[in-house]
Image (tube, rainbow, N blue to C red):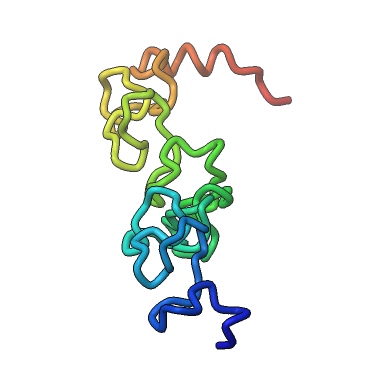
Length: 136
C-alpha cells in the first residue's frame, strides 16, 4: 500500500483507523468506537449498529422486524423472540406459551373465550350469544 493511502506509513502492522481514535484497526479492540468490542459486534465498522438478532444482515437499529417472525417490532410484544408476538393479558408470557391468555383464571383449554377475560363460563357463552346480532 502506498504511504499516501496508509494511515500508519511507519507501522507495517497498521494501515487504517476507522474510528479516527489514533489506534490502528489491527490493534483497536473497537474499530468503530461504539462501545461494543469488535469480537462481540456484528457490525464492527458501523458505530450505529452492534446486533443482528435474526441474522438477516440488517442491524437491529435499522431492522423493523428484529426476530424475523413477520410481525413488525412496533406491534410485537416480544420483538426479539420469533416464537412469540402477542401477550393478551400483559403478564409477560406470550400467548403461545401462556396457558391462560386473557388472565381470567380459566385455562385456555377450558375457556370458550380464551382472549376475553369478561367471558369464560358456559353462562357467559349464553349471554354472549344473546348479545350478538342474529343473521337474517
